Length: 152
Image 1 (cartoon, rainbow, N blue to C red):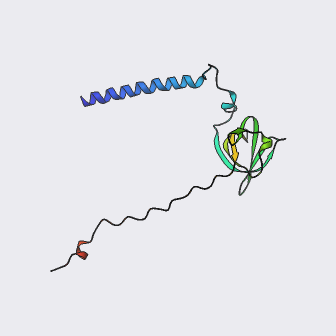
Image 2: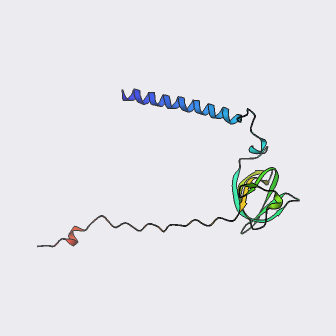
Image 3: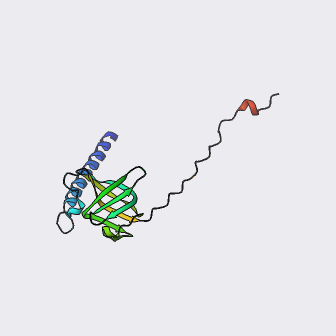
């Protein structure tokens, strides 16, 4: 009986998983108005998936549409295209509004040897999180009976 009940539960869970996956896949293909998602939400042709990036802006050049991040050993140059979403304090900004010293965190695609900035928010560098001190060692629960017991 227990084996039958386990099989029934597994079958029901599998059916729910298949149904929800198919529903989510269909919903992802179309937005609420029935149109496919905008091109800005998709990766450029030939690009791998996006990966996170963060750092301090060294320079921003609106003429060449690039932003460089100053590193300890090298500088990373990020391309900015028409689909790039830049924001500061939740408001959309242009490349010309990016300033040296801004802290940038966002997503980039590597495409044809260049890193293209997809989405980024700029502002002050967040403070380092407060690290808690390691926990003190626990006292030993073992007692040495021979050392503490008096002998007659």
